[in-house]
Image (cartoon, rainbow, N blue to C red; front, side):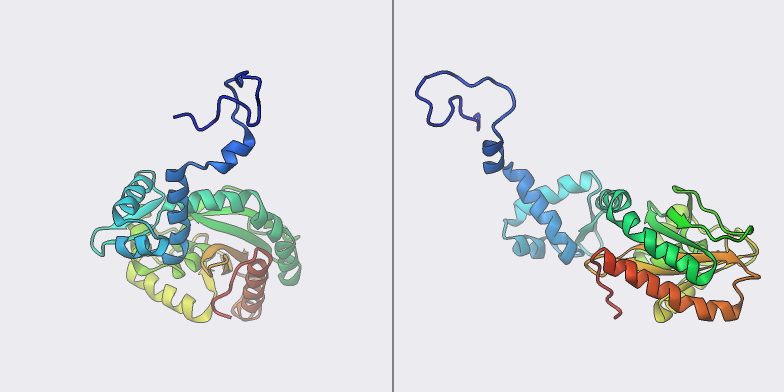
Length: 282
């Protein structure tokens, strides 16, 4: 059936409307029910991710059979994922990628501009902003320091997460199972003699990062370079990005790291606040 009436409401002329763009009022009054249900279910998963089909169906008030059809459709496009072992549904990578693209293009980079500049001025080193994407750390923007020897990551630069300050901070925010999947997909190659290429050593490091609230790339990607990083969080307290300071080891000594790490954490918390995020550790 055609949801758009052939006649203009209130018209007595009998003239038919042209078959072109539907009336805006009609389109708004009659949303696509299946799509509306699907988006309602997907939105609910942001707070109930990792739930069984029964719990999700109850949460949104729809029959389990209907919820299952919607979830399997989303799964085929990568927006949700199903763990056969636990029988739990959770948000998929594609949903994260779409959401990350919005942040990349709008509020996150805009909000980060001043924060990165202030961080660079406070520390005298280059400040960076990056996110995780498809198992990589991806640099979005940076505020370069004034020193001739400095770190440089052009926007869009990708790298392995296990050898990156921001990458390790983001890995530390994930469940171990998700970290294991990333390592299986991307590997754990060595770049220097300090790279944590042994998964056991990496997991020990991630535990330490969670305990202290910041991460350190200690010449693990490039010899002679160090990086201190902390996570930026969204409204749900989930880590969606990271801020870091990077520079030569000669300028980032152990004493410098002790001094700078709290500044990096404070900057990440400031950006979290600016984008309306929630710091669950505060």
